[in-house]
Length: 354
Ligand SMILES: *Cc1c(COP(=O)(O)O)cnc(C)c1O
Image (cartoon, rainbow, N blue to C red; front, side):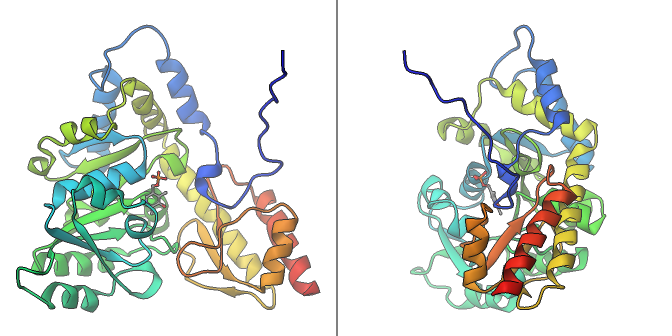
């Protein structure tokens, strides 16, 4: 009988993405505790009921909550709900919706068109949004219906409460529904140090796709509707799209674990602190350029391609295809200061040699 190779983790923790990390202890323990006996399937269990209540407390709002396997499904099904097939949704040109979902929003909405705009630091330029809406009003143009923003953005920047207010004011004036891709809302909240409601429903966000996986869960992001009527029949959409998990209690348990223990915010705060430490060190290395204000858990760096190549040769994995080029270093809940120092030390050694 052939011997199966025993699976091995990577030799070191990496900065490629926060989803390279494993499951945080708080989530793992909660999942373990949920793993006894039988429970009703498809979200009819007591864990799912409880986590929905916890999220209502978290947002301080009587919202409707659904769980999908991942963030792509959450975004795509949210768009499909907000828009009809002949509508369009406006978002930034670097948004996950546009660049990283393989057309899922268009597919699940049966044709809703994504209209992209530019803008500094991963945020749609508001004048460009207005131009995009007003450019045409004839029947041949896909009718703009929604605006999607990402908090924290794909470039690691964060909308302040005031900025959110300006975005929401514009959306309201142009009659656009406001969608938030909150795959890293935890990192944004940790950075802003405000209550979740201050940058969501209180400023007019109607739907948040709330990330858990990148922040320590194993599976399962949430779709949160602040206007309950918007959520009508969303459960059917989830089922049809293959997103209704039958053993839902384990998605719910992980969420309960991180919400009740405070790990959801603690994890995000820690990842942000690691990125802050990395940024500080990289700023002292000649020949590097930090590309965007570091406000969440990632640092984007422009560096000599030879340095980047040598860094990869030393076994570091990082992305250079996100946003507008440059190397992205993403910290996660389990990144350590030693990891950060090791990475920064290697970059320094290679940059000084180049
Ligand atoms: C990771 C991410 C998602 C979700 O991606 P999945 O791989 O589908 O879980 C959504 N939006 C943003 C901005 C992300 O970074």
